[in-house]
Image (tube, rainbow, N blue to C red; front, side, top):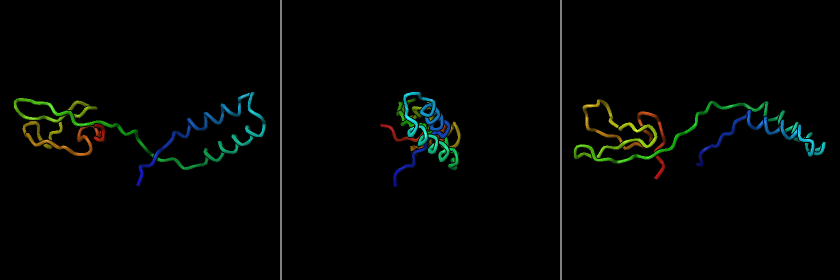
Length: 102
């Protein structure tokens, strides 16, 4: 299943407003833009946040390989800073970045 894509409703409405105020667009085109803007303004919105994409940077630290997030730079320690158990998950446990970059 493909990931869903979201658009910013206010940006779309702004573009329709620009079309309706463009002197070079004919009346039929402006009428269609008005209809679409009314339709879009009535659509339900979703509560979404941007996804940050990153990857694990493997660095040697005191003879150990220490993974750091490419987005926040933090290590991926599992519980305590005194532990040397690292997480190589699909998401950074610190900032939530999705680890899908190469």
